[in-house]
Length: 200
Length: 320
Ligand code: FES
Image (spheres, rainbow over the protein chains, first blue to last red):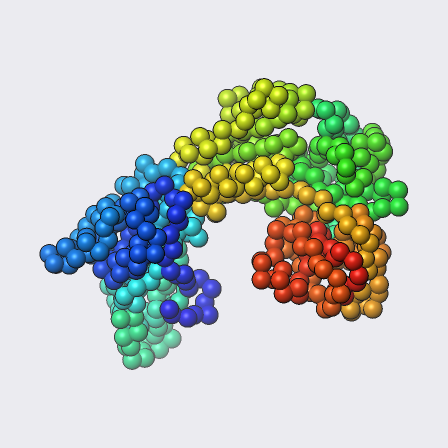
């Protein structure tokens, strides 16, 4: 896990089952699915039977088959994109009662968007069980034009909205589900450090 | 922050509100306005009961915005250390007392969509101001209040007339129990539960919530427990070199205060962590009576919560 001195940098302690939850909703991507399979092997089938998995990723036919098998006996719903997965999650939360436990496993943008959705339904972020797997890519908001830049793997990064070169900071907003991107060459325009692929 | 700032108040009204329960209305001794508080707050009341100096916490019950007076309710506990007995027998209209600043360790959760309040007996008191506040904010809440009988339960009538169907009263003398499993089993996402009452009731409520899959973050409790008594022992203060005797019915904190030693505290009930003190040396067995230290911290014997915990016999040296 990435270590940071910035307090708002989220930490993801890893998935653990709430064996008392009457319903479990688990959002994951391809990489996170491995963490979910491990969770199930630890928690047993009674736990998995109460789980709905939203697998939000683009999958090949074989991947779909293997993952559905790995994640049985839970009900697996496959959504082609993260945005679709989050939309589906919000739909499920709309009618959910207390006794529901939310989990997120996969990339940081995925976890962040699940936490953000939870917040909109008054779910305390500390009660969401999270595990970071796979890519280190980040979701970044340009503090200048407020555009969200998805799947950022480099630092600095060019803003897709205003074109400024942004330094990606560890400052994170749970409400926005994004890291902060700040103009890096405000003092001397054009004076930009080399771009590093920090978040592959 | 420390709860040490004291204010002199005068008792303006005393009313018997139920069996063994009296309500006290306190005004500033110089008729100055009191500070506002938030729903769920409590104050500590300083009592010079005979040769003892006691400080007991009591929930504030009135409207949080009412700065003209504070109201507390005191249950006369049979085997008490003398605090509630003192309030019942020695305090009347005109008595002057000292109180600490209002403190809130039991606030309603800001993000909650709904609040389920569970009270047992005198545990109704923090909910009086909480409901007042929630009602003013048009927040969704319901109260489930268990009483021995209508003569033993304080404010039953008042609550029912003010809050109507949001108040549910369960009478033990009629065999009625709070159907908590059913109540908690049917709540919308974003509901928070708050419980205040005797320890077994709190434990049962927390356990019921857990077994129904409620996250810890949605469950809140407050218990004002008096420090359990024991035998007399000696406290040595490493920094000042002073020695203080803690008598059987006192807490370390009370003994320090009686001897003019200032120690930090807030809740005085072993919950907030403010009074955590380092143990330099100890030749007795520490009885940890708090809800704050973790199991490894207890085992290490390096920390003690001086508002609640004591040692069986012998002496303890504290980093004070
Ligand atoms: S004063 Fe709060 S734990 Fe002791």
